[in-house]
View (cartoon, rainbow, N blue to C red):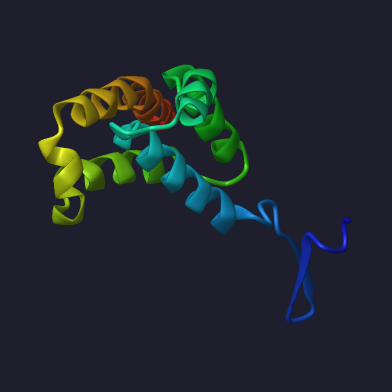
Length: 127
């Protein structure tokens, strides 16, 4: 397993700390879009039950947190939230009031993380 996470560049071995980073970025994007979109009006009983069980803000934040542990950056999460809010390709979500409320909930959860990171970086500058 260790050999799978090592890359040979030139004469040096470099550890690939996050071998599935791209997968986790895509998973994070799908999770956020699915949460913000919500259930369709004609959702089946199974879909409603699954959404009640796994589609809560807490579970979505846990999934995104897992993706962050495996290589997704908080900046990528915040950039996706901003893209959903501003990009014309997400106009159907922007028109939906419920979707924007769910997007605001995610913003409230992840914006404090960005502020903590910026404070940590700002505090490390020597005087």
